[in-house]
Length: 183
Image 1 (cartoon, rainbow, N blue to C red):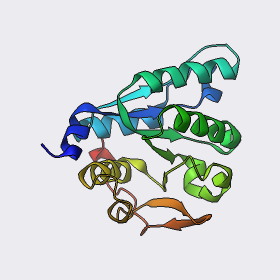
Image 2: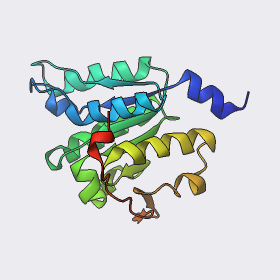
Image 3: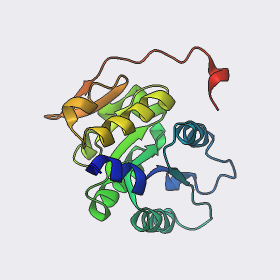
Image 4: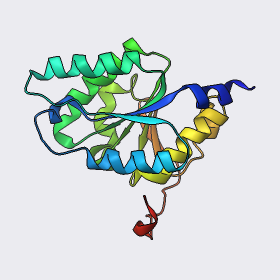
């Protein structure tokens, strides 16, 4: 069995809610939408959404522990503008703990201003620009099928990445017309 097929069977995709959202009682609706789409497409995934009133560093340690214990090859993280520094720090720590994992940032801030994450260019591998359901699913399939070949992955529409300190983007993905078709 080729290596990428083994990875697809043995590895999960982790979807991570930042530690800055630990005190909100709201569920991670965006990650839940994404998870349901991945599940429908046969991609094993888990959401990490740690809730609690502890200091943000304690929540981050709990998130990192879950990530370290998981057999995951791809980690998706959502981000808002108020979380840039928290996300950069979290990505650095994730890469130290799981250097082989691919880190993908999505959400409002990643979509509108991926260049704001220049301080994390060595830790964030890709950005999903816009709606994540189709783009992230195609990204996962391409990364696994092509053994993380950047040239092939970068053909997926709706992605951005750092290249020599600059943001490069693939062709933009069209918006999903029939939202009722999403699980």
